[in-house]
Image (tube, rainbow, N blue to C red):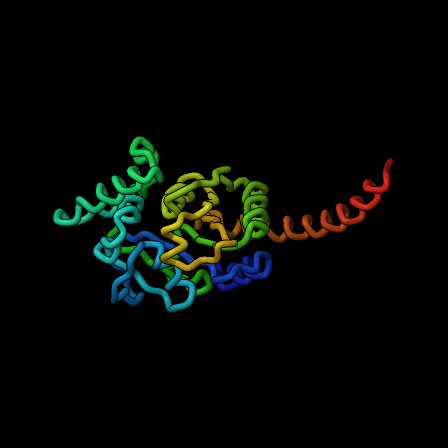
Length: 236
């Protein structure tokens, strides 16, 4: 298994994110040796915030029922008595002009219903992650986008709402940026200055390897442009 502590350290050094990168792993059965989440959260993305600052844990499908949109993107079926909640929230979003109903079938979804989902700070990931979530400012997103492109691991996509659809999108096509959504910002309390990058777990070492070179190149380009700018401003 990869050294996730070193990978987290490299990401943190280069990007200086406001919170730790989070590893997400979808499982076909409940994992052994990982604590089970006990409690209740208002959204699936709330688990990202918890994982960034607590020991690794796993959820089961019922832990996600409070979030009909997140349940949809994660291919988690709501129980019959709560099935209406997805239509209710989508209907409300459509009514206020936030989403068009014809957009819904285009939302990426996890391919198979999971039996459990593991969340962990990247450096403490107990299992290889399917997707790694990094919340950072625009500069961090720029660097990760450039590194992913350099490594040939970028989807080339920057997605709008909902934020959680970037998880299946990144797993399918490579590093995907997300502008987040207001629900995510409310529930996770992520900085208004931050956007997300979702890195496919199997691409992580390649992306981090390219990130070091991209960071050095940007430092050299910073000096180049800083020297060039005043000279060009003097030209008449």
